[in-house]
Image (cartoon, rainbow, N blue to C red; front, side, top):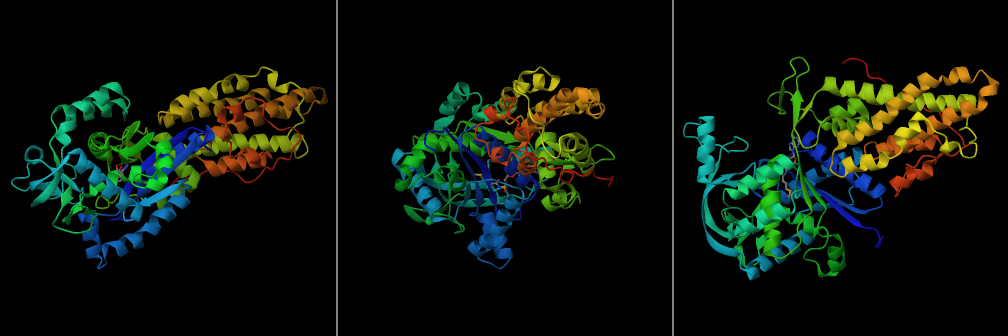
Length: 532
Ligand code: MSP
């Protein structure tokens, strides 16, 4: 393990005020695909997800259910574990901010911040949005009120729900001291924030000036106590952001080696609504305590629901009656189809317009008609013409030129360049080009006609071997998106030992096929969906 490079990727930790939904699943699958891809590239991956359990929002939700906050969180946590398990999420750790490791880490953070001189006590008098757990300045609120014509009622600039006035003694973090350092960070590491247009947004925000932020609360108690002031609990975001460091050993002397090896993270993947926390406050916190900064924060867009009839997209919401639950999509597409659809049809940096109509279209076109069909035709022909086996391969068969080999050569490099930037749609296009070419190759080479002529036996062997080899390579490349299907395809070619490769480039080199081994035809991988 120790000689493999570390790759550490995180999802946001989700609030436990409601069950997991399509949006939280989207972000988690984005990370899972990256984690699986990096493992296949030989990295020693740590993939973290978890729950954000403190704060006023969770406390209030628990009260509404007549439960203590801890009992409420405990009652909801299994729903997250279950859905991640169902969706084949391969996280290596699951953090809950009420765990002792997080409390120790936050305590250490306070002490180090205070020693470094970046914490001071003052009083806060301003606006707070409980559902968003966010403070807003008078200017931000006035601007939003004006834009929305709220006529005296102060609404959250982000979510539009009523704001509350908070007036209390508070500890402050000197965020203002980090403006120049943050701008220098963005200059030196232009891909600290991805995609580019989000980097520009973050920069503009920082250039407009940073104010110190309140990082403790006294008006409720569901939070980690401030170690040197027991009237105060930690502001939920100050606590939550640290989870990424906690999980690899921050604040735990017994994990110093692990921390040195794992930190900083390579990727924090977050939704566009929480980039200021991750791209401004979080790096400033790390700068304050002299710790290393994460390499990339990738901001994904929001899933919007597209009306199949009008083509209009709208935010998903229960009140609009267009909310879709993860289970609804699983029922329609199956887990693998679900993962494939969201990862390859929505450009990760942008808002994604999703609809049942589109799901069916993508599933039928890519999975049923193209990939599934290619696998089933090729395995069937192999079984039929070679007595239930893959053909016995002639020496040097892999060196012969053919149109599929031409496309397959260099495909891992092209695919990896996209995958490394979470450009999953482009990575999928590389694979689908090969799949489509293989389906055309069947039509052009007409193996059923070749099979009728015993004099063309070598030609038939080559055609079927080229097809099976293409399937083998595509199964590897598709594996981060659809791990079970890929494992199944390899198993049907008696290559189950390859399913868990840690060297994707070698696994995808043309010529890895095993000749003369058993082929299983199996059921259709993706039965066609009828019109809904
Ligand atoms: N607890 C904080 C994160 C703390 S991380 C240190 C939080 N939690 S959340 O549960 O409200 O949201 C978690 C993530 O879900 C965010 O990244 C958010 O962007 C994402 N999504 C919520 N609705 C979404 C969609 N409709 N579409 C895509 N993602 C969305 O914020």
